[in-house]
Length: 227
Image 1 (tube, rainbow, N blue to C red):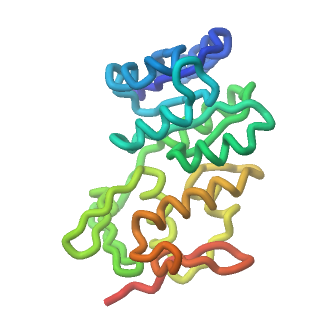
Image 2: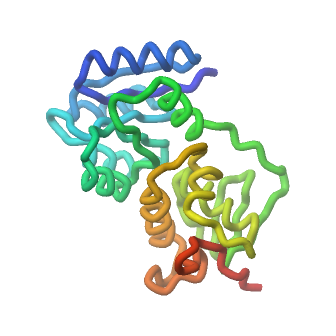
């Protein structure tokens, strides 16, 4: 079954272009042009991924992103204009997984969508330890004792990347390639914001992290497993 993408953008010409590009690559597309109707469209369409413009009539993209995140971990990619630096950070903090600057090149658009929808082929018995957490990779489940910790797919991928190589220090650039699928220079703020989001969920004390550890001047590594 083809992946379904919900495009939320009030620019009709841009939305049409996005639809043509994605449909030519085998994706199903649905459209919404008004922010106030975006959540209704999300519930109706039940998309596999959302492309979400920041500036919308009715309700802005950041608030829509926050509301979707309350109930779903579906991948969200923001569509932003050049120069919207503050809005980009706010959108990532609201729960977006990635962003694309408009006008997006068709090849970049497809690559970003595929990266977030890629199949996760895993060992049927893979189980990882990171800090005091247990990561059930095929089950996409993270637990601390009897507590199940809910993560978005991207947060889960980030945690797994670190846990699979517990003694390696990952630079932000390497994580952008392995987790986000970037093959060129990209915005390292993506990593910083998502590490903060991940820590808020998995650390007992996010200000004193033991699961996702910062190596100053280099990047991040997995915390030592607690036996």
